[in-house]
Image (tube, rainbow, N blue to C red; front, top):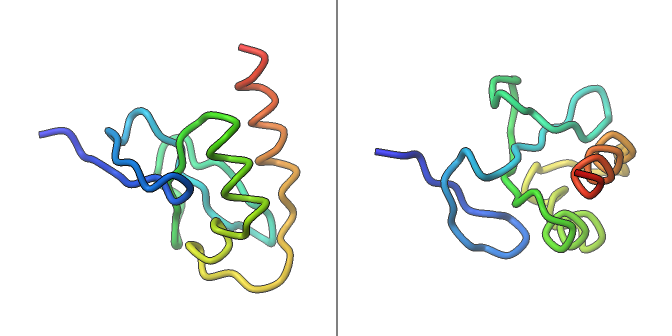
Length: 85
């Protein structure tokens, strides 16, 4: 049986292997490629629409239960890398 996760942005379900897990580490939003980092994680599709919606509307921060403004530049850099490939 394949593990299934729900995207916090679009609420669609997909296999875990097709999604990105995002965590907060030291005040920064990071992509957890191997899904092994400790702490609360949120799952999102690796497409511009879902990542942009999750960040700009604050959905990701609510899902991660984070207050304040963490550094989103690592996540934005990852998005740019995905868009280039």
